[in-house]
Image (cartoon, rainbow, N blue to C red; front, top):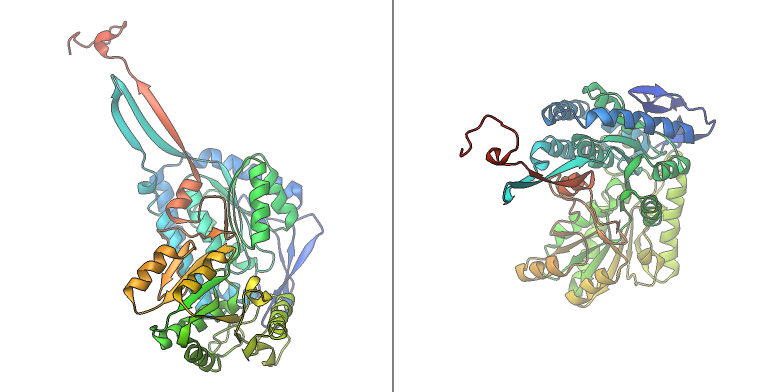
Length: 502
């Protein structure tokens, strides 16, 4: 079992239920971002090792698809119970390699469990339809069948939750799954896979291949991989979608975001400020549903900025395993420096840096950066046009609701959007007019529960199928329509033993 707390732990692959050591000679360091120290070495897969995982999954899928839905459901319940029982250990592992604080880590695990619980109801989701006597003696019915081998390529920012967006539905519907987790924090997803096998699933139904672009490209090219799921940045999502589709695969690829939160003059300022701080700085802003732009309408701007600033001053930034910490470090030193550069670029472009995260000091070599609030941002500044993916909140001031909605419409991303208002009519307009796939009304991060589906619009989603929930079931299955005709016994040429006029 990989242990992120032990220096230089070697992390390999999990194929057919056993650890398989890589022979590539290529490795990637894994760090504890709170200390800056390397804690493990990830061994990257060769093409042959990816092929071995695919072959193993293909053999497993041939049998797994015929296992009864009742049996699949029982195993999924067992998996759910093991994940819940080990939530603390999962949170510890992901915090050690990602850096997020304990409450965020436990929340991630809880949201992942929602998706396992949805998959426990797969019997209802897989029900087909039936028409008796569509024509004389002819019945027509439809079923949904698994694809075979499917793959998931998951990001560093949610190393437990995002695999659980994919694996439960894919496996419950009868597929075998190959997971390629992020190189930056692989220990938590590896532990998740171990719990999966402990639950009693057959070897090969879930394989884990640790790798980089070599592994990704092979998964996208191999003819036995029938579908690929991805969550990450927009440029990579586009590449995944185009490459996988060109190779005849189903692809769901979720990209980046620049989520806006409109605050109306009638909004509850305390509620809006609390929401802005938690949504912008939770998990150090490294999440695709983070609020990165607060759109202040009219006279609400000054009191909103003051309220946000007052709350920022009380935030405790520290290691994820410190119970006092409310925000942890960024994932890498390079990410920290890149985000800090955006704060400087905003100041150089003429924005007002109300709180400068670069001024914060820390006692060790961890990848920490303080929180930043930038006011008077305009739409031509890089802090507005780019996905920063860090603890930076921009404030754009507009005169009207219509201007705020237009900002969202003009933005190339369309993952999530939110509005804070006391007016029901304005809220109703916004839920209809907001150009985004997920919308919050006095809710800053409108991530759907496990029995709906997650996905944005525009450059936040490539392909037409969103993640988990009912859309996930449809993605990992394909429909088949059957038409059958059985001759009336009285018309049969063969004596079946029935009375002729029965």
